[in-house]
Length: 95
Image (cartoon, rainbow, N blue to C red; front, side):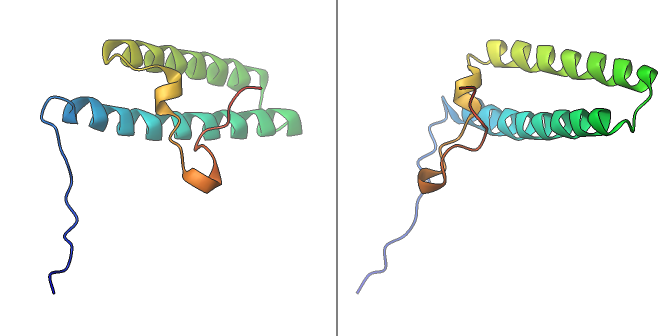
């Protein structure tokens, strides 16, 4: 009896875009986690005004860079939100 073999159907035309999508998804997940942590620290009073300003500018620039990269590769923010089946989506969605 032959055991079925798992094969990856890699289309050479889309492999770069798919890999870019995966990398950008991971970067977006980390960006959102860092943003949430910054908000928590700010609410707890753990940050100075200068630190809050620096973090705000940095996060805005990162969000802008993510938008530029998505545009460059023909992706939308929705494309980065992987569907995890019964678990839902990887990234929170704005309601």
